[in-house]
Length: 165
Image (cartoon, rainbow, N blue to C red):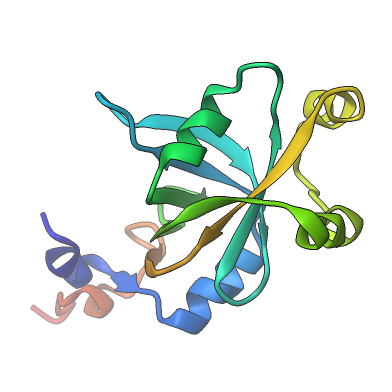
């Protein structure tokens, strides 16, 4: 089924403001980078600037595949989702160029960005290992959500069913 067909069951498109609010309240998603075969997918902590950029801290050792793929990529995708219950969930897909942040911008980010949900292991390792910041410039975004109630609790007229039949 297409997303349009799922609208009769209560799924809704998120507008730009809803996408921004959702991204501002989240801190973990899945980064998709192109390869010669299947895309490389990595769970990532991120920080959203509230407008059009996502920032990612990378641990870059002597040979980081994630950093190498990011440096070679002209475009990347990032999926952020949250499923509170099977009836309440949100999903946002972002697409755009990814690039390494360097210079003054990197210093500013290191001083101001809080990675609230970065795993402890990565926080500890980042003090001893080489770290880098990458940014995704959001050029395309789409968001969907379903904020319904379980069957039996929902008003059946909300899903196109008339309870008087």
